[in-house]
Picture: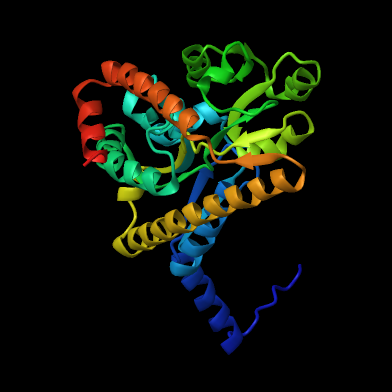
Length: 328
Protein backbone atom coordinates (compact mmCIF):
# COMPACT_ATOMS: atom_id res chain seq x y z
CA UNK A 1 0.00 0.00 0.00
CA UNK A 2 1.42 3.37 -1.03
CA UNK A 3 1.59 6.04 1.58
CA UNK A 4 0.02 9.36 0.52
CA UNK A 5 2.41 12.19 0.84
CA UNK A 6 1.01 15.26 2.56
CA UNK A 7 2.63 18.58 1.68
CA UNK A 8 2.74 21.23 4.38
CA UNK A 9 0.82 24.43 3.83
CA UNK A 10 3.39 27.04 2.92
CA UNK A 11 3.24 30.77 2.37
CA UNK A 12 3.74 30.09 -1.36
CA UNK A 13 0.85 27.66 -1.41
CA UNK A 14 -1.44 30.21 0.26
CA UNK A 15 -0.34 32.90 -2.19
CA UNK A 16 -1.00 30.63 -5.17
CA UNK A 17 -4.42 29.71 -3.84
CA UNK A 18 -5.30 33.35 -3.29
CA UNK A 19 -3.96 34.25 -6.72
CA UNK A 20 -6.10 31.62 -8.42
CA UNK A 21 -9.09 32.81 -6.48
CA UNK A 22 -8.49 36.41 -7.50
CA UNK A 23 -7.98 35.36 -11.15
CA UNK A 24 -11.24 33.46 -11.27
CA UNK A 25 -13.04 36.49 -9.87
CA UNK A 26 -11.66 38.72 -12.69
CA UNK A 27 -14.60 39.16 -15.04
CA UNK A 28 -13.57 39.43 -18.68
CA UNK A 29 -15.98 40.12 -21.54
CA UNK A 30 -14.93 38.91 -24.97
CA UNK A 31 -16.44 40.37 -28.12
CA UNK A 32 -16.07 39.64 -31.84
CA UNK A 33 -15.95 42.44 -34.43
CA UNK A 34 -16.82 41.26 -37.95
CA UNK A 35 -15.05 43.25 -40.69
CA UNK A 36 -15.23 42.81 -44.46
CA UNK A 37 -11.98 44.40 -45.62
CA UNK A 38 -8.33 43.22 -45.52
CA UNK A 39 -6.17 43.73 -42.45
CA UNK A 40 -4.13 46.34 -44.35
CA UNK A 41 -7.17 48.52 -45.13
CA UNK A 42 -7.19 51.78 -43.18
CA UNK A 43 -10.69 51.06 -41.83
CA UNK A 44 -9.51 47.71 -40.43
CA UNK A 45 -6.34 49.20 -38.95
CA UNK A 46 -8.53 51.77 -37.24
CA UNK A 47 -10.71 49.06 -35.68
CA UNK A 48 -7.65 47.18 -34.42
CA UNK A 49 -6.50 50.41 -32.76
CA UNK A 50 -9.97 50.78 -31.21
CA UNK A 51 -9.74 47.24 -29.79
CA UNK A 52 -6.31 48.03 -28.33
CA UNK A 53 -7.60 51.28 -26.81
CA UNK A 54 -10.54 49.49 -25.19
CA UNK A 55 -8.27 46.74 -23.85
CA UNK A 56 -5.95 49.32 -22.30
CA UNK A 57 -8.72 51.55 -20.91
CA UNK A 58 -10.56 48.64 -19.28
CA UNK A 59 -7.49 46.84 -17.97
CA UNK A 60 -8.34 43.86 -20.16
CA UNK A 61 -11.92 43.56 -18.91
CA UNK A 62 -13.33 44.08 -22.41
CA UNK A 63 -11.49 42.22 -25.16
CA UNK A 64 -12.49 42.88 -28.79
CA UNK A 65 -11.18 40.59 -31.53
CA UNK A 66 -11.28 42.06 -35.05
CA UNK A 67 -11.98 39.43 -37.73
CA UNK A 68 -10.74 41.05 -40.96
CA UNK A 69 -11.35 40.13 -44.60
CA UNK A 70 -14.84 38.68 -44.03
CA UNK A 71 -13.32 35.82 -42.00
CA UNK A 72 -16.28 35.72 -39.60
CA UNK A 73 -19.15 36.81 -41.87
CA UNK A 74 -19.35 37.96 -45.48
CA UNK A 75 -20.00 41.67 -46.01
CA UNK A 76 -23.76 41.35 -46.75
CA UNK A 77 -24.21 39.14 -43.63
CA UNK A 78 -22.51 41.37 -41.06
CA UNK A 79 -25.43 43.68 -40.27
CA UNK A 80 -27.80 40.78 -39.65
CA UNK A 81 -25.16 39.01 -37.55
CA UNK A 82 -24.79 42.03 -35.24
CA UNK A 83 -28.55 42.53 -35.16
CA UNK A 84 -29.06 38.90 -34.14
CA UNK A 85 -26.19 38.80 -31.65
CA UNK A 86 -24.01 36.31 -33.56
CA UNK A 87 -21.33 39.00 -33.40
CA UNK A 88 -21.28 41.76 -30.81
CA UNK A 89 -19.83 44.26 -33.28
CA UNK A 90 -19.56 44.65 -37.03
CA UNK A 91 -18.57 47.09 -39.77
CA UNK A 92 -20.82 47.75 -42.77
CA UNK A 93 -20.85 50.00 -45.83
CA UNK A 94 -24.06 51.90 -45.15
CA UNK A 95 -24.94 52.49 -48.81
CA UNK A 96 -25.08 48.73 -49.38
CA UNK A 97 -28.29 48.64 -47.34
CA UNK A 98 -30.16 51.41 -49.17
CA UNK A 99 -32.75 48.97 -50.52
CA UNK A 100 -33.66 48.09 -46.93
CA UNK A 101 -34.01 51.75 -45.90
CA UNK A 102 -33.29 54.61 -48.31
CA UNK A 103 -31.58 56.79 -45.71
CA UNK A 104 -28.77 54.25 -45.33
CA UNK A 105 -27.66 55.29 -48.82
CA UNK A 106 -27.78 59.08 -48.71
CA UNK A 107 -23.97 59.32 -48.77
CA UNK A 108 -23.94 57.36 -52.03
CA UNK A 109 -25.87 60.06 -53.90
CA UNK A 110 -23.50 61.68 -56.41
CA UNK A 111 -22.52 65.32 -55.96
CA UNK A 112 -24.71 65.85 -52.90
CA UNK A 113 -21.65 66.11 -50.65
CA UNK A 114 -18.52 66.67 -52.75
CA UNK A 115 -15.81 67.23 -50.13
CA UNK A 116 -14.75 65.90 -46.74
CA UNK A 117 -16.28 68.95 -45.04
CA UNK A 118 -19.59 68.52 -46.88
CA UNK A 119 -19.52 64.80 -46.14
CA UNK A 120 -19.10 65.49 -42.41
CA UNK A 121 -22.02 67.90 -42.56
CA UNK A 122 -24.15 65.27 -44.32
CA UNK A 123 -23.18 62.72 -41.66
CA UNK A 124 -24.22 65.14 -38.89
CA UNK A 125 -27.63 65.48 -40.56
CA UNK A 126 -27.95 61.73 -41.14
CA UNK A 127 -26.77 60.62 -37.69
CA UNK A 128 -29.99 61.18 -35.66
CA UNK A 129 -32.03 59.24 -38.25
CA UNK A 130 -29.38 56.54 -38.34
CA UNK A 131 -29.23 56.16 -34.55
CA UNK A 132 -33.01 55.95 -34.29
CA UNK A 133 -33.31 53.32 -37.04
CA UNK A 134 -30.47 51.21 -35.67
CA UNK A 135 -31.94 51.38 -32.14
CA UNK A 136 -35.23 50.05 -33.54
CA UNK A 137 -33.21 47.20 -35.06
CA UNK A 138 -31.44 46.43 -31.76
CA UNK A 139 -28.13 48.12 -32.51
CA UNK A 140 -25.99 51.07 -31.45
CA UNK A 141 -24.00 53.23 -33.87
CA UNK A 142 -20.49 53.45 -32.43
CA UNK A 143 -18.90 55.54 -35.19
CA UNK A 144 -18.69 56.04 -38.96
CA UNK A 145 -15.82 56.94 -41.31
CA UNK A 146 -15.91 57.96 -44.98
CA UNK A 147 -14.03 56.28 -47.79
CA UNK A 148 -11.91 58.48 -50.09
CA UNK A 149 -14.01 60.36 -52.66
CA UNK A 150 -14.91 59.22 -56.16
CA UNK A 151 -13.57 60.75 -59.38
CA UNK A 152 -13.84 60.22 -63.15
CA UNK A 153 -11.14 58.37 -65.12
CA UNK A 154 -10.95 58.78 -68.91
CA UNK A 155 -8.63 58.30 -71.87
CA UNK A 156 -9.44 61.74 -73.33
CA UNK A 157 -9.66 65.18 -71.73
CA UNK A 158 -13.11 66.37 -70.64
CA UNK A 159 -14.51 69.89 -70.72
CA UNK A 160 -18.18 69.05 -70.08
CA UNK A 161 -20.53 66.07 -69.71
CA UNK A 162 -21.11 66.21 -73.48
CA UNK A 163 -17.62 64.71 -73.90
CA UNK A 164 -18.87 61.56 -72.14
CA UNK A 165 -21.59 60.93 -74.71
CA UNK A 166 -21.24 57.45 -76.22
CA UNK A 167 -18.12 56.68 -74.18
CA UNK A 168 -17.81 53.11 -72.86
CA UNK A 169 -18.25 53.56 -69.12
CA UNK A 170 -17.53 50.83 -66.63
CA UNK A 171 -20.56 50.55 -64.32
CA UNK A 172 -20.22 48.54 -61.10
CA UNK A 173 -23.34 49.66 -59.23
CA UNK A 174 -26.87 50.95 -59.97
CA UNK A 175 -25.69 54.48 -59.18
CA UNK A 176 -22.75 54.42 -61.60
CA UNK A 177 -24.96 52.88 -64.31
CA UNK A 178 -27.55 55.63 -63.75
CA UNK A 179 -24.88 58.34 -64.01
CA UNK A 180 -23.81 56.85 -67.36
CA UNK A 181 -27.40 56.88 -68.62
CA UNK A 182 -27.91 60.50 -67.60
CA UNK A 183 -24.78 61.76 -69.39
CA UNK A 184 -25.37 59.61 -72.47
CA UNK A 185 -22.44 57.27 -71.86
CA UNK A 186 -22.63 53.57 -72.61
CA UNK A 187 -22.66 51.62 -69.31
CA UNK A 188 -20.72 48.36 -69.44
CA UNK A 189 -20.76 45.96 -66.49
CA UNK A 190 -17.26 44.62 -65.89
CA UNK A 191 -16.15 42.69 -62.82
CA UNK A 192 -13.09 43.93 -60.93
CA UNK A 193 -11.03 40.88 -61.88
CA UNK A 194 -11.64 41.57 -65.60
CA UNK A 195 -11.20 45.33 -65.42
CA UNK A 196 -7.58 45.57 -66.66
CA UNK A 197 -8.27 43.30 -69.62
CA UNK A 198 -11.41 45.26 -70.50
CA UNK A 199 -9.37 48.48 -70.53
CA UNK A 200 -6.58 46.91 -72.58
CA UNK A 201 -9.00 45.61 -75.21
CA UNK A 202 -11.15 48.76 -75.37
CA UNK A 203 -14.26 47.15 -73.89
CA UNK A 204 -14.33 50.12 -71.48
CA UNK A 205 -12.58 53.49 -71.70
CA UNK A 206 -13.74 55.30 -68.58
CA UNK A 207 -14.98 54.70 -65.05
CA UNK A 208 -15.82 56.45 -61.83
CA UNK A 209 -14.06 55.37 -58.64
CA UNK A 210 -11.66 56.59 -55.96
CA UNK A 211 -7.98 57.45 -56.24
CA UNK A 212 -7.31 54.49 -53.97
CA UNK A 213 -9.00 52.06 -56.38
CA UNK A 214 -7.21 53.76 -59.26
CA UNK A 215 -3.87 52.88 -57.68
CA UNK A 216 -4.97 49.36 -56.70
CA UNK A 217 -6.17 48.65 -60.25
CA UNK A 218 -3.23 50.49 -61.91
CA UNK A 219 -5.64 52.54 -64.02
CA UNK A 220 -2.73 54.78 -65.04
CA UNK A 221 -1.55 51.96 -67.31
CA UNK A 222 -4.61 52.42 -69.55
CA UNK A 223 -6.24 55.79 -68.80
CA UNK A 224 -4.69 59.26 -68.92
CA UNK A 225 -6.97 61.58 -66.93
CA UNK A 226 -8.38 61.57 -63.42
CA UNK A 227 -10.91 64.29 -62.61
CA UNK A 228 -11.09 64.71 -58.85
CA UNK A 229 -14.84 65.38 -58.70
CA UNK A 230 -15.16 64.06 -55.11
CA UNK A 231 -18.56 62.88 -56.28
CA UNK A 232 -19.49 61.01 -53.12
CA UNK A 233 -17.81 59.73 -49.98
CA UNK A 234 -19.65 56.59 -48.80
CA UNK A 235 -19.22 55.71 -45.13
CA UNK A 236 -18.45 52.54 -43.22
CA UNK A 237 -20.25 52.33 -39.88
CA UNK A 238 -19.24 50.26 -36.86
CA UNK A 239 -22.30 48.85 -35.10
CA UNK A 240 -22.76 47.26 -31.67
CA UNK A 241 -25.45 44.81 -30.63
CA UNK A 242 -27.63 46.76 -28.18
CA UNK A 243 -28.16 43.89 -25.73
CA UNK A 244 -24.41 43.30 -25.54
CA UNK A 245 -23.83 47.03 -25.04
CA UNK A 246 -26.51 47.30 -22.34
CA UNK A 247 -24.94 44.35 -20.48
CA UNK A 248 -21.70 46.28 -19.96
CA UNK A 249 -21.19 48.19 -16.73
CA UNK A 250 -20.80 51.99 -16.94
CA UNK A 251 -16.97 52.10 -16.93
CA UNK A 252 -16.84 49.63 -19.83
CA UNK A 253 -19.54 51.51 -21.76
CA UNK A 254 -17.69 54.79 -21.24
CA UNK A 255 -14.40 53.25 -22.38
CA UNK A 256 -16.02 51.84 -25.54
CA UNK A 257 -17.76 55.12 -26.40
CA UNK A 258 -14.56 57.12 -25.85
CA UNK A 259 -12.59 54.68 -28.04
CA UNK A 260 -15.33 54.96 -30.70
CA UNK A 261 -15.17 58.77 -30.71
CA UNK A 262 -11.38 58.61 -31.03
CA UNK A 263 -11.65 56.06 -33.86
CA UNK A 264 -14.09 58.29 -35.75
CA UNK A 265 -11.76 61.31 -35.60
CA UNK A 266 -8.72 59.18 -36.43
CA UNK A 267 -10.53 57.41 -39.29
CA UNK A 268 -11.62 60.57 -41.10
CA UNK A 269 -8.05 61.89 -40.91
CA UNK A 270 -6.72 58.55 -42.23
CA UNK A 271 -9.21 58.60 -45.12
CA UNK A 272 -8.06 62.07 -46.18
CA UNK A 273 -4.42 60.95 -46.01
CA UNK A 274 -5.15 57.82 -48.08
CA UNK A 275 -6.82 60.05 -50.67
CA UNK A 276 -3.87 62.46 -50.80
CA UNK A 277 -1.33 59.64 -50.99
CA UNK A 278 -3.12 57.71 -53.73
CA UNK A 279 -3.77 60.80 -55.87
CA UNK A 280 -0.03 61.57 -55.58
CA UNK A 281 0.71 58.01 -56.75
CA UNK A 282 -1.54 58.48 -59.79
CA UNK A 283 0.46 61.61 -60.69
CA UNK A 284 3.78 59.86 -60.09
CA UNK A 285 2.72 57.17 -62.57
CA UNK A 286 2.02 59.71 -65.30
CA UNK A 287 -1.71 60.31 -64.89
CA UNK A 288 -3.02 63.85 -65.31
CA UNK A 289 -4.91 64.62 -62.09
CA UNK A 290 -7.15 67.63 -62.54
CA UNK A 291 -10.01 69.46 -60.89
CA UNK A 292 -13.18 69.13 -62.98
CA UNK A 293 -13.67 72.04 -65.42
CA UNK A 294 -16.53 74.37 -64.43
CA UNK A 295 -18.85 73.11 -67.18
CA UNK A 296 -18.24 69.46 -66.27
CA UNK A 297 -18.83 70.21 -62.60
CA UNK A 298 -22.10 72.04 -63.38
CA UNK A 299 -23.27 69.23 -65.68
CA UNK A 300 -22.51 66.55 -63.10
CA UNK A 301 -24.27 68.58 -60.41
CA UNK A 302 -27.42 68.39 -62.58
CA UNK A 303 -27.00 64.61 -62.74
CA UNK A 304 -26.80 64.61 -58.96
CA UNK A 305 -29.98 66.71 -58.70
CA UNK A 306 -31.87 64.24 -60.89
CA UNK A 307 -30.68 61.27 -58.82
CA UNK A 308 -31.51 63.12 -55.59
CA UNK A 309 -35.09 63.69 -56.80
CA UNK A 310 -35.39 60.00 -57.64
CA UNK A 311 -34.06 59.13 -54.17
CA UNK A 312 -36.45 61.55 -52.43
CA UNK A 313 -39.41 59.94 -54.18
CA UNK A 314 -38.43 56.65 -52.52
CA UNK A 315 -37.23 58.06 -49.19
CA UNK A 316 -40.39 60.09 -48.48
CA UNK A 317 -40.78 62.61 -45.59
CA UNK A 318 -37.81 61.18 -43.65
CA UNK A 319 -35.54 61.69 -46.64
CA UNK A 320 -36.79 65.25 -47.14
CA UNK A 321 -36.19 66.05 -43.46
CA UNK A 322 -32.63 64.73 -43.71
CA UNK A 323 -31.81 66.76 -46.84
CA UNK A 324 -33.40 69.88 -45.32
CA UNK A 325 -31.25 69.46 -42.21
CA UNK A 326 -28.13 69.02 -44.37
CA UNK A 327 -28.86 72.13 -46.43
CA UNK A 328 -29.51 74.46 -43.50
